[in-house]
Image 1 (cartoon, helix red, strand yellow):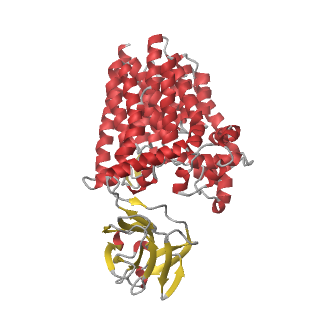
Image 2 (spheres, each protein chain N blue to C red):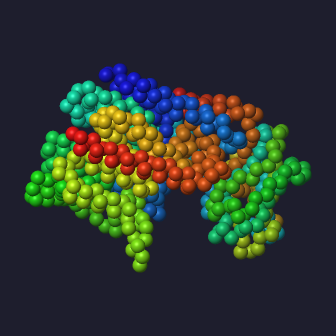
Image 3 (cartoon, rainbow over the protein chains, first blue to last red):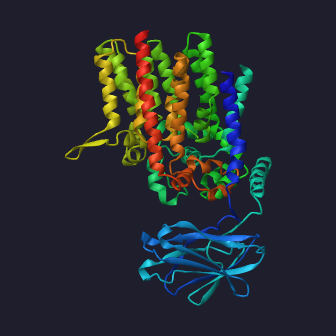
Length: 192
Length: 401
């Protein structure tokens, strides 16, 4: 019985205190925050119709942009392209996904090579599916109000404040940083 | 004993506070309507679905609603004023980032702790031999399986499990009438104890007793559910995952008919008991029946609690089975780990950080190397084979005595 008591105690403590660290070590990128809330308003993207979005990167090492994408009836099986531009409108990164891999309402991450000095810098990206026909649209949602770092969007030659409910992702300097972040987040919540 | 109990409670409180399965919030959100005077939760949820932040149906039986709702009303002072807004919060991140979440989880899971400790004491009393009783008590308190099944998955089935165990305490003392009452009350929380009625029927000494002990559980259940009987109740609670999964067709015999494996084996066990077994030991039939369920159905991890106290009794009664039972339990725990359901694994840890949303499930990871469904089939087949042999061994041991 003593063995079972030890086994149980160690297993439970392992699950509670060690497993979170092991899981943290598998995280390759960190979101800069939570996805902003969004309403039912959507923009349809296909053919030459593209969305342009300005935003500010809140962290260094920008490596992905994620948002919720609808692919009605999963009809879009064409390329969905995200082009990332710096403040001077120079194309700096490109990420291409196939609509085949985008479910209807999925949170989709466009991953690209790390942009190291991205902290507090303004960027813009375009989202398009140039070879998709009118019945192969993808749709993106619009946020209800202004959100931190999401500046403005342009669609059909009209520019408005706000934009899509995007989340930026950043590559951590090391896995220790992630592990430390997980435990410190948990402890600060526990001790608050 | 006191020190052990203290350690057991500490481990349980820690798991309660740090691991979060969304079910606990869902059923407590639903049970909170009792405080607002809603009696028929099934029709209320159906009628107000469009306006509610959480759209799920109440899948449990009425007694669960009243017990949870009543408990919530009792501890509402401890939970505080922010509790209702937490229950109504549909945001995946804000729910786990709420600074009060540890308090909410510990308070909401506290009834499980009471029932869990009660199970340990029932096991202590189950054996006449004090040493065996203490062994069962310790084994119940110190095994990682039940701690995780109850507290990580916020397992509401513990109400039925305790009542079923008490029923078996009466069965052991040859008090079938009391046992049937407890099985009836247990089935008012979850339907599965009713599946045991055929064996209770077999155990009755004469036709009158057979009929009475079979009728009582059904009567209790009918009395409790009758006021709620409606399409909403049938749809959300009565046609549950249990009935649909256990009675899933197995293999076709042509002309759209098929053999339902679960029912086929249950029937086989019943007729074996009737025609071959002169001195029926209901404990053996119950445990073998549960082995059959877990061997031949796609089970939810919460269901494993149904069998847990009986496995402890079995391991104490037949010590040579301890290791095989440990191995089979591990297998049974690992299978749901590979279901394509985040709340079985990764999501349980979201209190630590929502960054875990970025991690793939074990299913997705395995998919890169091997077909996960095939892998689960391998594990399930191994479980079924092992369980059948353990069942055979139980009958053989009984013959020796």
